[in-house]
Image 1 (cartoon, protein in one colour):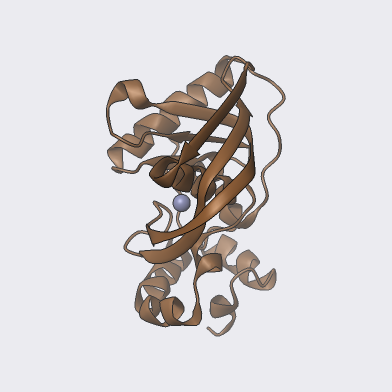
Image 2: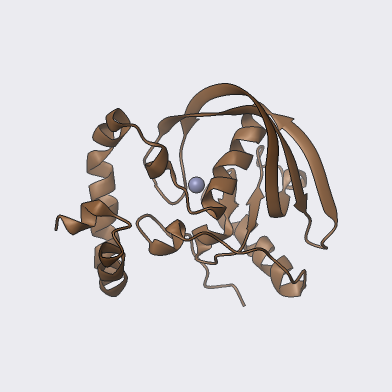
Length: 190
Ligand SMILES: [Zn+2]
């Protein structure tokens, strides 16, 4: 059912759309999570959020080590009790080739559901907490492009332009819609 899913890249408008809460914890949801874990692994990523496969629901998968037993799935995640701050470089499977320094909370509490709808309540720091924040950003339609300062924008200008051109070639109709909505001011200049 999800065999044809693929990772969507910026500036696909689905990446900018806030995602909705999951209400049904059924076999479809489990299939989607399994497929997302596969896609994440193939792309050598450590996290993947549902909007990154074009599905705007509040779920993400992650695996900080690449070992199968470390696969994690979070549904309807809520992050609270952010504490401390740390800056580190981040990349994104929807923005290949772009790495920018992003300040994040060092420690956070995560409350979410697992695939059966059972509650998850965890506290993590450092790298894991960073992945949580990056993926939760995706569920709110927030991307690394929104976290870029002027310097990072300038440094990644060429790469962003290439992604725009690649996207416009593949989806001429969606690119037109995205530029109308002004979700990507760079497209307006074309
Ligand atoms: Zn990402």
